[in-house]
Image (cartoon, rainbow, N blue to C red):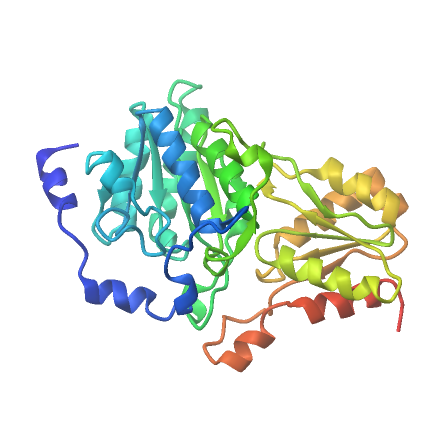
Amino acid sequence: MSAALKSLFKQPLLAARLAARTSRALPSAVRHNSSIVGDTITVREALNQAMDEEMERDESVWVLGEEVAQYNGAYKVTKGLLDKYGPRRVVDTPITEMGFAGIAVGAAFHGTRPICEFMTFNFAMQAIDQIINSGAKTHYMSGGFAQCPIVFRGPNGAAAGVAAQHSQDYASWYGQIPGLKVVSPYDAEDAKGLMKAAIRDPNPVIVLENELMYGVSFPATAGMSSKDFVVPFGKAKIAREGTDITIATYSRPVGFALEAAELLAKEGISAEVINLRSIRPLDLPALIKSIKKTNHLMTVEQGFPQFGVGSEISAQIMESEAFDYLDAPVCRVTGADVPMPYAQNLEALALPDTEVIYKQAKRVLNIE
């Protein structure tokens, strides 16, 4: 990095610009780090632990992004890393996603392992050429000569009251691209294990988090205490076993699906909930195995209905042996096919929740 760039990176972002981007993004209870209580850990802490452990393990791992250093991250995910590792490995950048993503990709080609944070993946659209044309394709185009071990991470999908330009789910966008791996954690175990796996992977990895999940606490599983704990890509998790219908989803809607499964159970309906975890590669064998048992499939996502993750799953199931086991068409539950409204009442109507999943599952099963 040139002396000029080093000097540029030392300039902090204007507080007013940060406030304009984040002041309404989260309720106050989610804006600050929660402490571990008993055997629980928040998603934020899990992500922070993963980066801390990998930075300690490998000196080539470093973090860059807007406000990741002096401000401890817009959502406090990088809290404490500057104090521990210093400004050479935790780098504040200007508000120029295309610029710092390009620097990160170049640094990955040079042998380091950058963790590039976007304040939201909506802003990563400014850097999509760097991510896809440079990051994802160069290993192939160089005949295997140039590897790009980089992690692009940050909040993705709908939040609260941040309207159309800050609410999009990019899972299907990045899931299309050969050369990328794409994961989307739900709970703290997912967050820590997938992040550590992403940092260690020799390929560019997209980690799609959800800002409304950062402050949510989950039980800390026994394996999470190991510094070598990773969640392998392409392996879904059965979040709840069932026999009547399979509900496949990822990120925050996993919680809604589990709540809907509880409601269905009260009516004698047994729903199996699959936490996909990994978008690319997709764990198709897990879906096929579940469908052979339940004979019904419903996908849930907060993204738009056309050309989404659910659409791809539906197509792959139709082309597999699982198709012969279906007793009803695959049902896709998605966000509304409109830009995200700003009004709170309309925002709620634009996203699938527990009640929507519950009603659609009964419709698939032809139960009144």
